[in-house]
Amino acid sequence: MTQTQAARLMDGTALARRIVEDTARQAAALTERTGTAPCLATVLVGEDPASVTYVRMKQNRCRKAGITSRHVALPATTTTAELVGTLRELSADPGVHGILLQHPVGDHVDERAAFEAIAPEKDVDGVTFASFATMSFGLPGFVSCTPGGIVRLLDEYGVDPAGKRAVVVGRSAILGKPVGMLLLARDATVTYCHSRTRELSAAVREADIVVAAVGRPRLIRGQDIKPGAVVIDAGYNPGNVGDVDFDSAVERASLITPVPGGVGPMTIATLLEQTVTAAGRQLGA
Image (cartoon, rainbow, N blue to C red; front, top):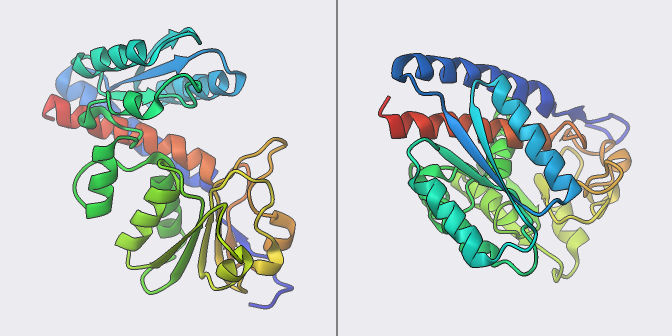
C-alpha cells in the first residue's frame, strides 16, 4: 500500500446492525421458550447530559432488540453506600438479567466499589474484577463491551492479531487494559502506552495494530502510523473528533475506524448481545 492510497473504513454501524438483528432473533426465541424477555437494568447517577443521552440510546436499542429495560435514576447526591445498595438489589432480582452502571458516577462516589456490587453473571458491561479475570484467562464470562466490539471488528475485516505488534494507547480499566488482554489472547505482542510514555510516536510507528483509547483529540498523528497498519480509534471527543488525526492517518493505514460510526455502535451491540446471553444462562435456556 502506498501513502497515496486511502485506508478502507471499518464500518462499525453496519456490523453492529447485523449483530443487533441476530440478537433480536435470539431474544425472541428465548422469550418464546421461557415466557420471559431478557431485561437490562440501567443505573444513572445525576443528570449529566451526555450520560442521559447514552442511556436513552441504549434503551431505544433494547426495544429494537426485544430486550426490556428497567431504568433507575438516582440523584447526583447519591452516596457510594446508596449506589452499592441499589446495585446489590438489582443483582438479587431474578427479573433483571443484566446491569449497566452508566459512568462517570461523580467524583464523590467510589466507582470501583459500585462496579463490584454487580453480580458477575449480570455484568454484561464487563466492568467487574471477575469479568477482567475471565477475559485475561480466556474463561467463560463477559467482555468489556468496547474492547469486545473492537475484536469483533478485527474479525469482520479479516485482521488476525497473531504475531502482530499491537500498541494500545490508554490504560483505563474498562477499555485500554482489557483490549490489550483480548489482543494478547489472540497472540498479538502488546505494548501499553499512556500519559507518561516517553517517545510515544516511536512506539506507534512500530505497530501493526494501533488502538487509540486515551481521550485526547487527534493525539495520534498520521505521520506516526506505520504504512499499512490497522488503526482503531476508540476515542470520542467534543465535535465528533477521535483520538486519531483521521485526515492524515487515513492516508497511511490499511484499515481505520471512523468517528463516529466505527467503535461506538459496536459497544452497544456487544452490550445487547451479552444481555441476551446472560438471560439465557440465568433462565437455563
